Image 1 (spheres, one colour):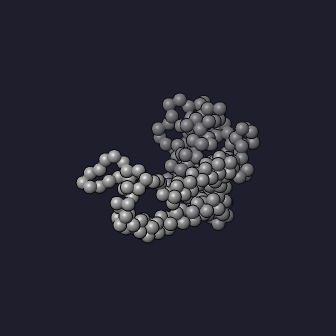
Image 2 (tube, helix red, strand yellow):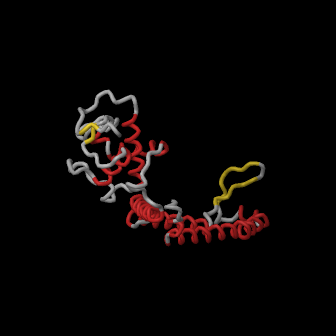
Image 3 (spheres, helix red, strand yellow):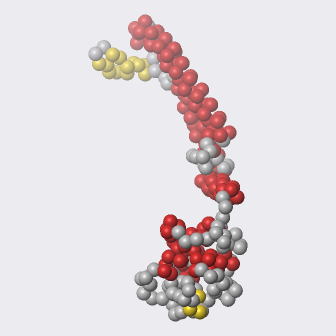
Length: 244
């Protein structure tokens, strides 16, 4: 299993032991196949009659084309390999149950921590949008819609027509501190609303980063400027701002 680009389970001590054991088994099997078995077959061919009439080896009562089947015991090397597979499977079973090896929940925690770490490193390097640099862009609309559905739809409805929060698709605004609509939207999302404590400061609290607030602001700006408005909208609240 790959976690965040790292071969986590390949590096796990138990995995390394298993890989070494498997390698040893493969090498032994190859050696046995090419040396021991070939020598045994050659020996059996030379002493065929002796084995057939031997009391220790049972002859199965059938044969075809002169080929006889002998009831030999299972080779010791085969038994050993079989026992090794049982031991390995038992080790894996209990390590899965009682350790973090191959544990999906532990795997998720590692992946989640690594992802958060990378996000923080990325955010440190990349300049975040602020009230001075924010601007509307069509390329932000789709991402902004996703952010809106995750963070804003509960209070403002999916279409922005308003629910317990105000309608975002009309010309009325409860909070209007900035001279342009896109900056005003950004300001409210960043700082929250003094008139309504439910509208918290997503940006100032660090809950949503500047670049995501810019995307979110672009989407709200987009639905506000659309000619086609939602069918069922909340009654106007605040002051009508014509210059937006």
